[in-house]
Image (cartoon, rainbow, N blue to C red; front, side):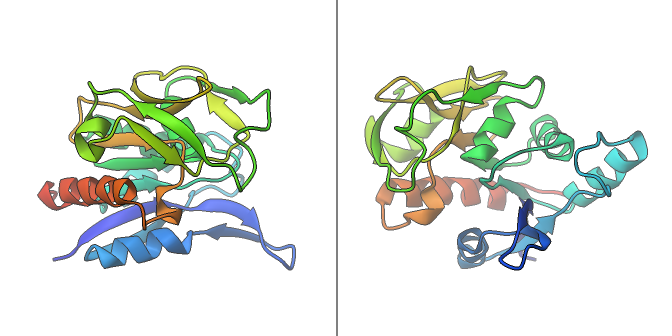
Amino acid sequence: MKKRVGLILRPDINGTNKDIFEIYDNFRRIIIDNNCIPIGIIPNILDINNKLKEEEINELINEIKRCDGIICQGGDDFYDYDKVIVKYAIENDIPILGICLGMQLMSSVYEDNITLLDNTYHNHKDCNHDIVISKNSKLYDIIKKEKLNVNSFHKEHVLNSGIYEINAYSDDGVIEGIEYNNNNFNIGVQWHPERDMEKDYNKKLFEAYFEAIQKRNID
């Protein structure tokens, strides 16, 4: 049976001004290319700004239990339901990969932990900049490089790593990667590897993620 990868859908407004929840197609294609099935995870509450009640948390967890891995997509904001999903993944060792906002969400599971950037260096779509990866990190073990030039663009940044270890910084000191080494695979990156799969280091990151998924057994 193929493994199932849950994508936390992001709220947005489409071109005709309708509220939608979306999966970024790059992720859908990468999941299928790795012989897995993409599953969209959506909030089970009418107002996404509300905190989940106990019954709603249990309902959402039942959906997460169907997944062999979780991807936290980029976006503009995260909500209480996002934190419920990531917290469950951490506590049950479900492989999780966070991208941009997804990394910020992961670092903020137990307390809000992000703030606005005070410059425009990182927050336009043509931004490529250097990062340095700690040699004492799982991310380095995967990528095998200490310095990268990445396609990072974001308007907020992580203040500290929360329960995570910091594994990468940008050349101006912004946190660009985190990992939780009590789990088999739990990594967040501030850049967008899914948008530049021609780069070898981005391929290696996804390969390591899907390898962890294939090794995981669930009922």
